[in-house]
Image (tube, rainbow, N blue to C red; front, side, top):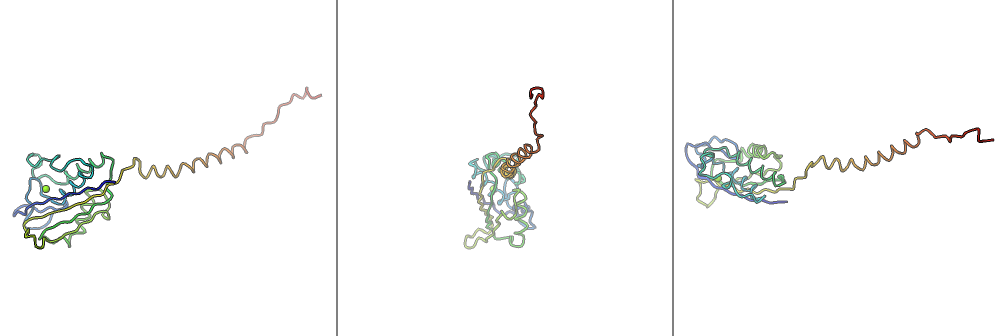
Length: 199
Ligand code: MG
């Protein structure tokens, strides 16, 4: 098993679309950034890359690279997922915390959870989405995200191999039974006598 942790922060900026966890929000301010500023997906991307010691989001997508200007952060996450797969792991579960003054995440938490699960190609039951307001931090103009991931070793063939493991003893038993049946149904070989010899 592997554990990974990531965090990120982006400042709110007027006139920018707000996207969190791959979900567009109807909000007067978005998150400034070279890409779409999706702080939650950036934290998740770093957590996944960290879990397999594959560097960080900046290693793959340098902020100065014009190719990633206004990029959909789902692309970053997809790259991290490929690194995880390449290392021979799959996601067991993820947990995240968003810290932001607004908008309220509670009313859309379920939708957000489903969207993140969809992007990670895992069950929504394996995705934790929590949100807090930055009480006492005086950071109402910033969104912060923390993410942890747990990975488990991916077994080639997975469920199929398990089925084969169960099926193998059954197959051996079937072979034994088949041989026994064949023996009992084999035509009995009668000794061949040359009747001329019996005199
Ligand atoms: Mg970022």
